[in-house]
Length: 256
Image (cartoon, rainbow, N blue to C red; front, side, top):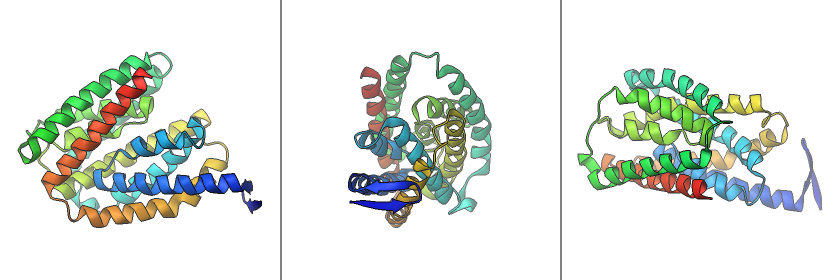
């Protein structure tokens, strides 16, 4: 049985795969809506059991970009301009370095090292709760640089920004809005890199991302309602748990 689409024929298997990807899009967007990052930790590993890795990266980069713009523009007045203005220029530098290193760096060792560092910070966040130590603003430059590099190399630019902003004494609204601005910039750059690399030159990832968009937006909506019930302490702990998953995921990928 086949159904016609703008991109050609959709078999029954394609429809089942698309439905599963839509469910993943919902889950990933819910995580993204709560923490501001980390959706790829759920979507990409599972999606690669359904579609090949380049297609999964391409399709979900489009959905992540949509999520980033949706959250980043939801409450722009809460974004702390001095924070994102310090971070954004270094994201460009980090992305440039990441593109250069992409073909030269021993990726497995780098993944393991980055994952270990993220795990240490995550444990400190989980142990500290509201008493988590505030760090200086100069750490913004390291966060932007590291986020640009890791976004290009591993598709995981969010953890460095989240680690920095969660330790700046921001309210949960300021944290979410500021991280949203950084994520908009970072993921949009990543999409541009994927276009340049040819991963988004066919219509299929665009059409399938469009088909999954309603589920993705629903996940953001549910997350927005849940976010209002979070205290700052609960948000820091949620970030810490996502960082644990992020660090462990990077270590596992490096060892594999």
